[in-house]
Picture 1 (tube, rainbow, N blue to C red):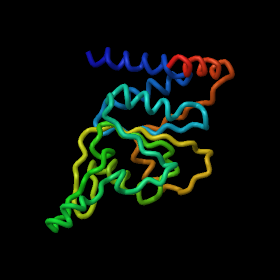
Picture 2: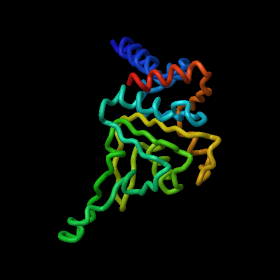
Picture 3: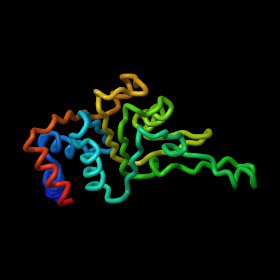
Picture 4: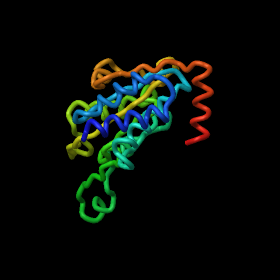
Length: 191
């Protein structure tokens, strides 16, 4: 039964995605273990973000959150923030955990642009399966995390190798041929 679902997911993604079929198969297979993490690397315009979204949606339905390294992501968006009313009224520090922490699917678009502080929080989540904010800890259950980056982009921050070691696999997507670009345009019009 699980085998059929995996085959169906592969077929669905390959139908909506152009080229790189072997990479798609590896990407899908990697999601079969708890707390799976994948990094997709490719130049601009190959479909890194599209592939990430197809996988997250295909496995988690609507239970996923994507953060963008291109925006000024703050700690509260990734980990959590203080619940101010409980602090003011009761003097109790209560953390409101971010949707990124609570969701089954976690996506990071343009990983190479994340600030070091946010990267450190995500690294801790991937390494220990937990997050900390304001002295409080939240265990993170099973999830899939898919990130992408363009290695030839000028980045704002350089991340240390141990951060990249936390990814189970790194998929490299090749650039598209001219005929594949026309096929991509047809798919974009269709979907």
